[in-house]
Amino acid sequence: MAPIALAFAVLDLTGSKTDLGFVLAARTAPQLVLLLIAGVWADRLPRHHVMVVSSVASMASQGLVAALLLTGHAHLWHLVAISAFNGISSAFFFPASAGIVPQTVPPDMIQQANANLRLALNSSAVAGYAIGGVIVAGAGPGWAIAVDAATFGAAAIFAAAMRLPPVEARETPSFVTELAEGWRAFRSRTWLWAIVLQFSIVNSMQTGAFFVLGPVQADLHFGRAAWGAILACEAAGLILGGLTMLRWRPQRLLLVATFGVLALALPVALLGPPAPAVVVAAAAFLMGFGIEIFAVCWDTTMQQQIPGQMLSRVYAYDMLGSVALIPVGFAIAGPVADAIGTRATLYGAATLVVLATLPIFGVREVRELRRR
Image (tube, rainbow, N blue to C red; front, side):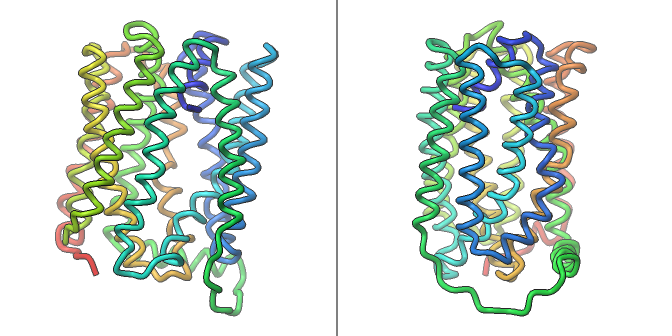
């Protein structure tokens, strides 16, 4: 619910797509500063404990946003500051959650575990997007964000109930040494840093265009409930992709994953004219399917190829590179659209997604690396 609610909360406050970009950038920017630190701590501490603390912090930040919106006291700077705090909490959650999968399942079931995990996540997203759009349209963004805050509390309870096998005790080196170990593991694998470099461009262009200019186009042409339905179709595509990956075990995981990325350009381009809402929704469905194929293949490759004791640190470098330019994409989407037009901006973003992806097919490891 939160992406829909936050987008329209900002548009209700200021009516500015540039302001919306700043709020979204404020959430992402702290992750750039803290992801590497979070990766080290996720390898040092019980990972589910890190997830609990992160979820409680996110519950508090979203609850504060909801209270400000519902009481009519919210200002733009409130949303920027609280979004930044929420970005801090999420920076610690994701390296821990990504590194926890190999601790819970045997190696030959990692792909199915990743697919099941993402199926649960994406199934809730289908209902969340659709219901969030209805709540925002009928009752306002504050109530949707209040429900979102409650879900973080539930997440903390579930994470606290996890029981993980004990981690083998090891001598803890210095913080800098652990960072250096993670960096060596990251840069020594060409397939890894090449795809992360690709996603630094893909994520900044796709997220900036889709999540900043998409709500603007919806407000002008579709309606807010329709935007929720479009995001629900994306989540439905994610679910179908997850179901596919429960059964399909491609040998060349990275090659299949890269084909999936090309689908991200389609709904961005179709928002330009814009195409009818049902057409954009169908493209969002295909985008979700492609994202999920990539995500399961990528997580499985990472968890098979990276030693478990440094997995969270390598994931942190992966996430840092992948999100490095997202704040830029959020921040410039509005001003660029004001300067050259929304349609041209969306077409340009879709083109850059394709141009950043095509060179990855030339990386030998992407074409030849096989599952273990």
